[in-house]
Length: 97
Image (tube, rainbow, N blue to C red):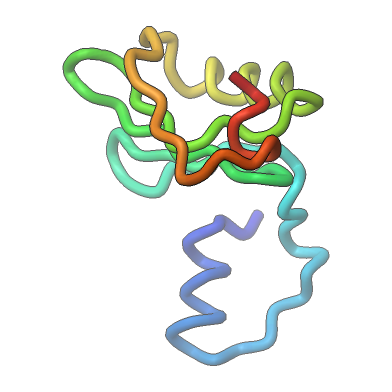
């Protein structure tokens, strides 16, 4: 399985064309980017940061993806969500809360 970081490295660092079938951008799969940092792919992605106080989420995707996104997040961490940071107010970024 190709990870999100492997794909982005191939695209950015190697200027390689990547078959989109390798990674569905809306599969709601969590990719751990670093210790305590993960991204859940969705119509609008969620970035999750694990802190000493709990989880900080950057965006929450759309309402129709809330349950599978939550399930994906909970497969990674059971910590309480302590903060949500919205990059902007479009429904596809805030509706999953």
